[in-house]
Image (cartoon, rainbow, N blue to C red; front, side, top):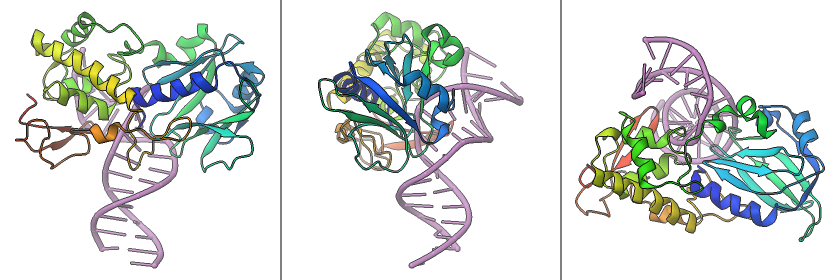
Length: 282
DNA sequence: AACTGTCCCTGCAAGC
DNA sequence: TGCTTGCAGGGACAGT
């Protein structure tokens, strides 16, 4: 499940391999992945444009084009962006193919692959963001891409009476954190996922701030998490290594490796699973 | 404001 | 073995 660290890893790949290259041809298979506009719109708006940058806000990949438009890709659950050689065998569920002219490297293709088709690809004009991609316009601050100091986290936490877990998952509050990293961050901060956000001590707020940055930074450094089922892989098809560092996610019933005393519990709320140690998270 | 539930979709696992 | 059912999960949205 691509979250901030996985999307950032993909962004770095795009920066290295896509920026400066021209898209000569666009193929769209399943129209569902371009549902925000249409097959025709994507083909028209991308063909013969050059990619000028690779940015990320939360889990959204944003690529400015020389046309003035922006290409947005969201991987959601099972999306992959892959760089491939021309003529290479395309995996099942390859829904969008961008043909890239020879640039500094040889000609190639960029594939958008997504079995569950929750992901999407869209091109929009920046001044139309409120209309075309309203949730992107309302995204909260990104802990890595934006300035994210302790005071900012404090203002977010103190203005919410919600539990910490759903607050961390709310993309309007903080952008980029998903289920895996929310659990790992709260564990690192030794905070119980059901603790009301506005009741934290100054010390706990500082712990949470440090844990958000530490966990996300470490995960990026290790190329994100690749789990058995979701098969996240980067642009070149490589998996990440952060899954080996998970202390609570996917460890239900195991002894807590942090305190050595608790047993990792898994609870469900709002259809999402939460993993935590009842002994060292309070 | 903050909850819960529903929907979208596929692959995998468990149960029969 | 082969079917059916259930579940996971990001995030928008509707309803309370």
